Image (cartoon, rainbow, N blue to C red; front, top):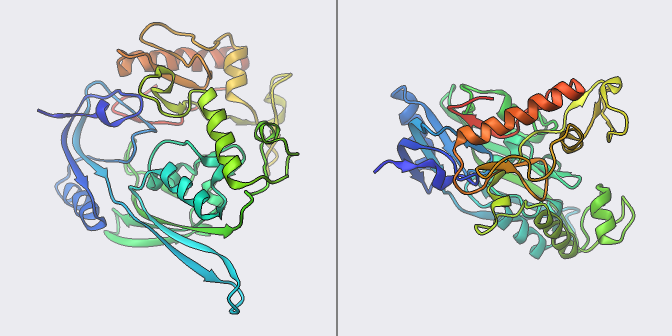
Length: 349
């Protein structure tokens, strides 16, 4: 029987794969991708499946599921006198992201505590420059090791060479096809400071929850628990029994527009290039799409308007129809076209 991709995505959508290969070592991962490329077979690299919308027809190619594991910390000696300046931790691409965050918090590695509860694998995080609650992975990534499908070799990119931006990186930009990049992430090396307090809290909602001022600090464990609580309240922590979590997380990115394009009353965060980032959730709600909008098959989450959810029996077509309705409604109301964050495989908006 063909492997159904709905069994490997958090949206629980997606038809059959022509072939599914599980790679438990880096060598297996490279070999599977290289063999498919040499045969001219389309390749889909699958991590945690949390950022994918796969068509009902499935994927007519090789799906390579990344199941590599390993976290290798290396304590730095900052001043040569035994004073510990931080930790370099090299993590295999297939490690579960939230397992790494839990390990970091328990080990007093500072810098990813506000990224607790995000589903998916470590290897996917630099591609999207995953972020939440005022933190982004680019703030702690030291380097990314990849398989280059064009040069057919292993390369390592330092942070400065990764092209990180808002939900963006060179790994997202250098695409060979709509669903696959030139670079297959093999492992990510993070540089953490050490301490019992988290990084300065940069997100107002999180600061209020922790009872600190923006820019203040709180114990790592308290930050993690506060973030998990906030995410659960928005249906953003996976729970098989809760259809509000059968999603790809935030479906649309926050748009970055000219200052004059921001609707009156909408949040506005100035950007370095003179433009302004505003809230996709605000635009959706004020365009008339409230929590739970949709039908018995696919709807906006009842907890958060940015999540499009499978209510149990949806098809990819049902979900995409809802996405088009919301995107077009926002554009008609405010003249701002929302952009989907998940990767679309075999389908389009």
